[in-house]
Length: 248
Image 1 (tube, rainbow, N blue to C red):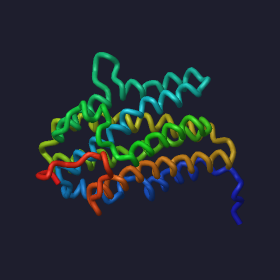
Image 2 (image 1 turned 180 degrees about the vertical axis):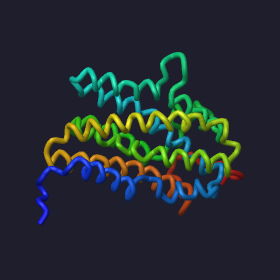
Image 3 (image 1 turned 135 degrees about the vertical axis):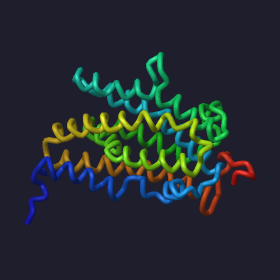
């Protein structure tokens, strides 16, 4: 009988992260499947870009919270790159600015996204839950929650290809994804190595794995809300963004 309290070998520990991604990452969500099949309307893509902007805009806040918890200068040096990637460095645009370009490519204004007009309540709750998670859980769990980046490259490659094929009017807004093709794997490599090194007990390993499941749940919940509001049954809550009739 396997000892459930024994420290997992490194290869098995890493394999379990990948197994979580295969099972739970949001690449399998019906909303994304519709997107990649070219079956979303302009209005549905507008809702996605608008709500996802709220998530994107809080990534540097989440990363700053993780960075502030570390007493290791080497960790802080590596992790602050993530904030620059999203905020920019004053000479080149970061991921947030690039996502605003995507919002504009859908036909919405950047001001609407920045103000958060029409954002689904579930999006706000999910984003708040993620920031609260990295602030309130252990530093190990906070870092492990970022490991969805292990799986993002394949999704981004597919997404860019399908968006260009099915929604050519979005082409001017796809720069965000090009940057993440290199940024996400670099970030994931560092974070995974750090988690493997610092999960020194089976309990800590289990906490790290649970943190990744929690992050996957957050991403999935945001898409659940979009699908409910804008696909089936198509019931956006009061105050939420409503596509123009011709886009619905």
